[in-house]
Image 1 (spheres, rainbow, N blue to C red):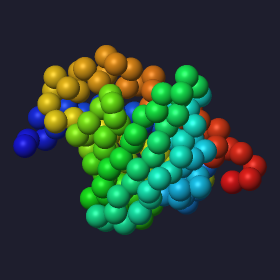
Image 2: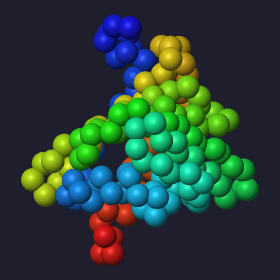
Image 3: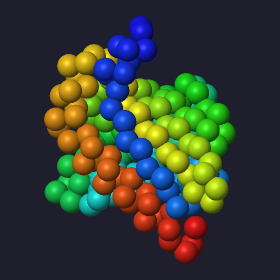
Image 4: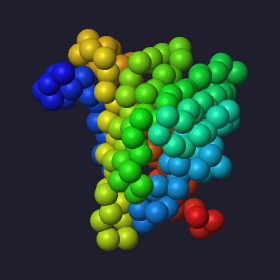
Amino acid sequence: MSKTNEANRTLTLERTFNAPIKLVWEAWTQAEHITQWWGPKGMDVKVIEHDFRIGGKWKYVMSMPDGNEFIADGVYSEIVEHKKIVSSANFKPMTEGVILRVLFEENGAKTDFTFNVIHPTEEYCKQQEEMGFYNGWGSAFDRLEVFLSAPAN
């Protein structure tokens, strides 16, 4: 597939976190941290599986205040410490068959962060955007920002 095709199938969020790259990396890679921020505001997260290595599987259950649950799972395909995480991902029942590409770049005492979700088709990408991709993930990354600024970290 061409890069142009991939660009048309990708939704991207960028942030600069006021935290060192080591801390941002740990927030993404350690199960006890993931439970503190993963998912939109108001969702509790339980880590069922977290095998952080290439070929390792992850599975999280996100519980909504109304009792409904979403299952998020995937398999890691690329890990470059403090630089990149690539994984397949399903967010059942809403989103399936996407690729997450998470990029980290040191910026002094801060971390520049790029989050890409690559969809199988342009149509599916547009549908996911219309379903609230930016609000949902934006809310999760707002939670991550709060978590990173907490004194315990």
